[in-house]
Length: 273
Image (tube, rainbow, N blue to C red; front, side, top):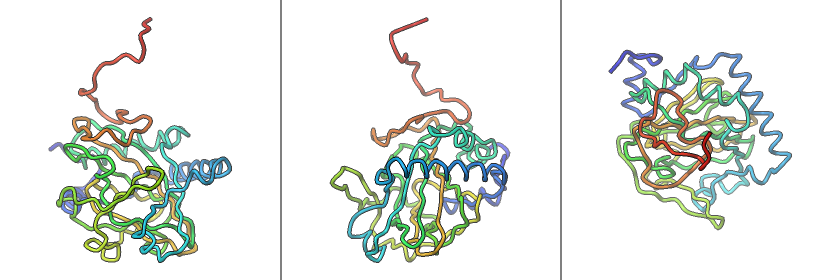
């Protein structure tokens, strides 16, 4: 393996053993402020256009039980790079790509998708323990997530929780469901892997968590007086490929670093110049 570009050797070892790692100083304070301002402006604009269309809380009896049957909610927007160049710069930041290269052991890195969640104060929805694998399975399991915290985050305001090392278990049985609209919600057995027994991962504003899509993770109910804002990026290695034709997103397959020698040369239309 080549010399590490961003992670320390200790961070690299922690990543391999636990399936996640926390990083600081990926973005400058100025960059975090720019991302935060663009994020707030986007959500405010979309709230005015279609508040109902932003709802992203999971459904089902298991979720109601986890939330204590309160009227929980979470608001979400996908594909933020399609809304502002600030998010495009965020996902192509050299520090971030150095960290991903260290984590993935490849310099050929492709975008899968981006999304953002806001958990509002006092009723921000929890998420049961799940593996992102079930949403978009890939052959080599190179898919990972980058979770950028835009607020100080703890269990009290709906922070992240993980089962360290669970990425080594491979894909687990899916206990999810499909609602009347056809939306799918994937999670593992809540009795075997309860949110209450997971390890909380608190983070400061601007810190990121990188984690494998096989890592069991979820998040707590936000009953605090503080919002929890997050921006999520998911990527894969160029030599990996999906096993199911699911979860298509704009810009999927965009080369963030390196090359994609596996992509076929195709024409978008019959016209030539």
